Image 1 (cartoon, one colour):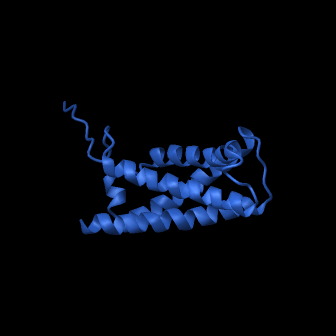
Image 2 (cartoon, helix red, strand yellow):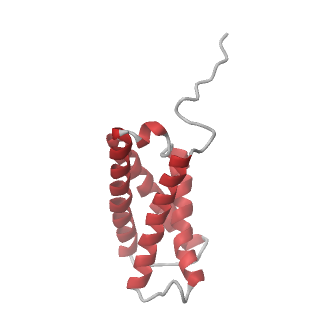
Image 3 (tube, rainbow, N blue to C red):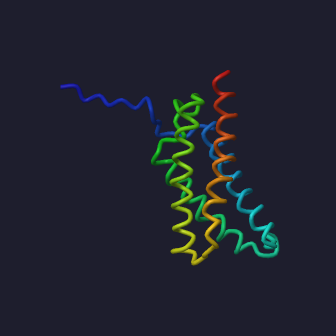
Length: 140
């Protein structure tokens, strides 16, 4: 009986490229939420706690769903098609997790267009960023 286990698709260690990719993802999400707050006259410098409470649910949702989906594996990062598909599904799920956390844990509510806005703009930013990364990785 063979007891070998294949671990080619997922690695226990996190390399520098994965950390940079995750930092880019999180940076885009933070930027998206902060731009939204500024458009609603919330100054993140004057109200840092409010800003963190607005950012945290979406970053937590993103990291949790991305980890479960295997979004940071090399095979996903190096394929534009897989990147688009998996990033799209991951963000839609993560946005919903973020919206649920925002309402249940942080007690924030929003008008009905907010879920559409955060999901739509997050999708554009994350998928666009991930396509650029996949094209660069594909050329290396």
